[in-house]
Length: 150
Image (cartoon, rainbow, N blue to C red):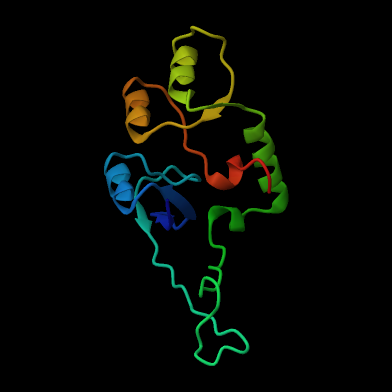
């Protein structure tokens, strides 16, 4: 997994998690990467500096452990009040997590094979593209909304 700091054309910053470095390019070209706030597809990777930290007692200036200071929090969640964030998480957690069955369940709901209900889950890039081709609307949720514990 690789985590990129991303920014849309409107200046909203957020994280994107990808299986490998090439996944961002492929997903972006396929229109699968969008800002979670404004749905802008003009998304770019933001360079993030990592700074080595000198720990006390380390004469060489090399940090023990990872050697890096934690990156400052610049994702979308950082700009939201705790109350807004709490309510957004409540809404998301009130959905049924169907996991990797998301494409199948989304189709069943879309084609009225089962009663409509709010669901969330995972879909591969090709599954997401196929759902969009069928006219099934859905949105990718940022990780800070879908984590079960905070």
